[in-house]
Length: 230
Ligand SMILES: [Zn+2]
Ligand SMILES: [Zn+2]
Image (tube, rainbow, N blue to C red; front, side, top):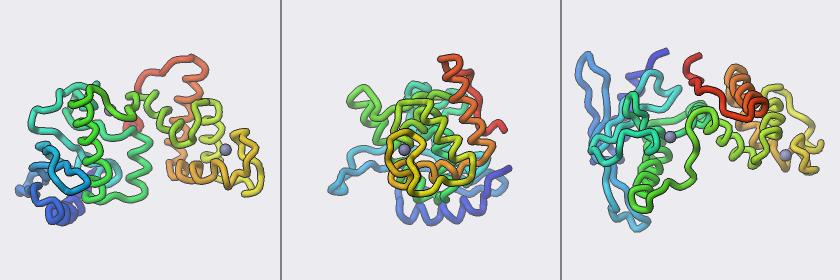
């Protein structure tokens, strides 16, 4: 797999129209990128602060997010700050979340608006308040936390039931009781969440089911493996 660079270039041209503090750079024979200032604005539209950023298509745009780098030296290159220490790019979402967002279809503009700007708002929050809002763990535990949020449960055995439901590729009748044990009808309970998660591939669902089952069996997080290593 490789990134669709011409798509990236077309979308970057649209992005910089909406975000004129960003610049689209194309150099023959090199990977294109976008760089410049990302302005964070309040509800009145006034600029609160700005971050220097650089955005590259990464290895597999648009199947995965582009890579985003903070280039002003304002954020430490430290995973505790949600910056990956190997490449220095921003840790924007957990792998299953990123996969689902990309599968629904992203553009550079929607990515900046709904992912990058909230990420930097959260960085600003950490800078000012000393902690992140709604922070998720890294690695496999973070993946499970994502599913717990989506299924609105802290019970991993329910997460496993619902992941199995998504993996089965057939839905229970709408009026039957939800498999989570809530006694509510499936359609009024977990159907929307299961449908959303069912956009993951069989391979991905099997991967996350294994993580969840291993976690329950070992009562600990297995060693981190990346879903992108498949
Ligand atoms: Zn992170
Ligand atoms: Zn339910």
